[in-house]
Length: 248
Length: 378
Image (cartoon, rainbow over all chains, first blue to last red; front, side, top):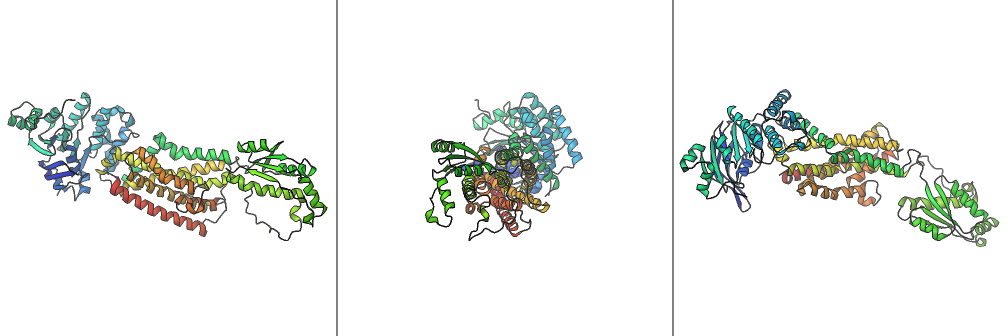
């Protein structure tokens, strides 16, 4: 049965002796913007890869949009949009061609695809560069076009894996606005990030994950109140004794 | 399979081959340069004549030896250079300045005179031996020159009509197969069609490995696209490119003087054979992409499949028995029969070659798809 929520129950993923995801359970409501916050290597991307059907869990169950990720991956793929952590794009295609290619892979009608591609590209601030080869784009432009590629099919559920990492402030603001618009459209969004301010600014609820375990889950305000701290970084420090982003 | 998906992925593949200089070179420019280079080196822009450079050392200086040299010069396939001593002539042969050296012995004239003095009593003849040195590095020269020299010796001894001299064994009247004007390039041209197609292995291996390494394959996998759509679109795109490749080689080979002795059906069979070979090499490319993890490694490892096909199955005459182990051999064999021997397009030889290439194609492609979808796409 189709719904736009996500239900994760006792999810475990092991790579040889390493447990990347350790008995993870949470629910994301339809239309919710849910943040998975944690340091690098916490298990955020592994969790996302299980939820989008790229990785098989060692044990546990995940249902996305009413579809079991193991049993009904084919239907699942028709309702999701995925923005990977490392932007994957064709360097020899233009920005617009990259976007339209993924629209075609989602079987979008030609006229709707053309209009939506132009709208989204304009909205993310790449209107003037749409006809340039993506291989010539800056890092920020690549991340922005990658986000548009993920959302071209107007997905019910969007998985955004560190969409603003290493982005310049201007690009980050454009992407934040883009993500806020998704919420106003009633989309369910899972956003992984290790930026505290991003999680605080965008997310309805935040799950804090460390060493594959969910160590806290609530609205940002409730988490701050519960731990009597100023920001989510301090929540993480209070629970683990470490910073989310270690100094280099 | 959705037409929209196949069309989008096929267009993407075609754009890659046109917009990335390395791929453009391998798919379209390489066959053009290959045909041009070999045509210039081994053809002669349609004149169809091959000329061998022969060094002659005349130790006899008799009327007979002059007559022998005149006959050598009159031959349309040899150009003669005279040498005063054997050492210089052999040195030039070693340095590749001449293809062969002929030594006319001191008793050459005496031997000819003794023959004509008593043609029916061999015991009365003075025997003489014309020594011949040929370039061992050239299979064509070492095979072609000795019978030509033998023929000219006979012509010198018996005169122009030596073939009419009564002999107990006669060569029958030759059936005209119109093969007298073949150049070395003509023999190479059929192999070139296969030669260009086998580099598909490298293109596919690099392409899939790169898409996997950059996360593009994963990204496509989270759309409704199926693995069979990805591979089918790759076959479509490379089939279209193969048609362009074959057309380029046909046109360039034609400019270089190559005239295939076949008609429409023969050309159609030739296209089918090359397409089958391209699909077979897509299979090899998928196998390569399964076992390597970077585009650079894919380039190197793809030569495991390219080199045997190149050396055993195109225009490099190494071993026919070993050649039967690679699909390109059957393509070259069929194209040689069609284009040079004028074999009917539906003759048994051609059909057997098509069958064998089809079996190779089926087996290799299925193995490639199974291996890549099970172990190679992540």
